[in-house]
Image: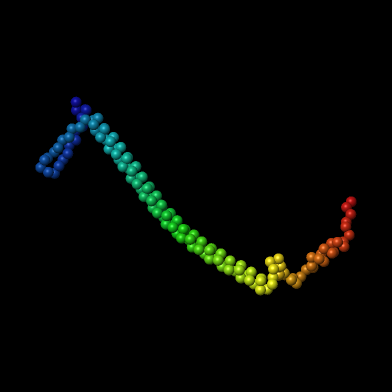
Length: 136
C-alpha cells in the first residue's frame, strides 16, 4: 500500500516541527498536469498580452501619422484654392489686357518672328516646282 501514496515532508522553523503530507500518486499526477496546464495557459496569455501591447503601440503611431497627413492635406487644399483664385484673377486680368490691346481670342501673336529658316510658303512653292520622279 505504500506504493500507491507519496509522502511529502515539510520542515518548518516554527515550533510546529515537521509536517507530513500523504498524497496518492494519481492525485499527484492530476495536480502536476493541472499545474503544467495553468503554466502553459499563463504563458500563452502573457505572450498574447505582449503582442496586443505592440499592436496598440503601432496603432497609436499610425493614428498620429494619419492626423499629420490629414493636416497636410488640408493645408494643400487651402493652397490649391488660393492658387485657383489667383489663376482666375490672372485670367480676368489677361482678358482685360486683350480687350485693351484690341486682341481677339482668335488672334495669336507670333512669338518667333524672324527666327531664321525659310518661310512655309517658299517651301510649298519649291515642292511644287520640283519635277516628279518616275518610278520604274
